[in-house]
Length: 121
Ligand code: HEC
Image (cartoon, rainbow, N blue to C red; front, side):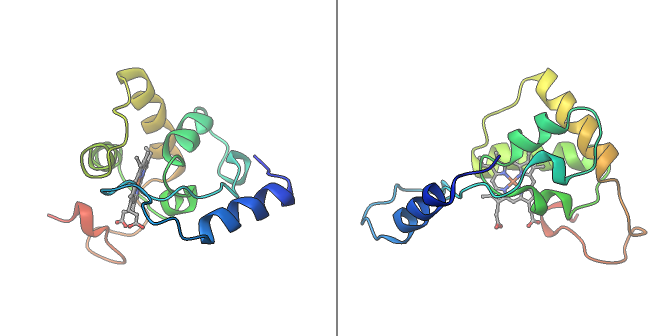
């Protein structure tokens, strides 16, 4: 998805302008999207995962992880519980997990490399 430069500029100005009350709690600030699903590995359900996760943060944050299906499932639970992501229904969750598992499987051998601190036991 692409915004016209004028729109991007307007959004940036809006974000830079102090407004006093910018809402309360842990709702993340709106960030203009500068990514599109096409930048990520082509597998079924890519759009479901992309648009399900980019409501709050960019998809590079997601793509930087390499997790098993169970860990991706926990990640979604975490987003729901901690960050107030709207609970996906079973079908949506399946679709997102199918994509995440296929596109971003575990890469480093267990116990090596960078570990997701939210998922450490
Ligand atoms: C309702 C908002 C919201 C949605 C939707 C959301 N997230 Fe998040 N997510 C967050 C917030 C807030 C953070 C913390 C951001 C940070 O630390 O910069 C985060 C962080 C993360 C992290 C990084 C965790 C770490 O260890 O730093 C991962 C991975 C992640 N999200 C995956 C996902 C996936 C996968 C989806 C889609 C299935 C998703 N998120 C959807 C709010 C959301």
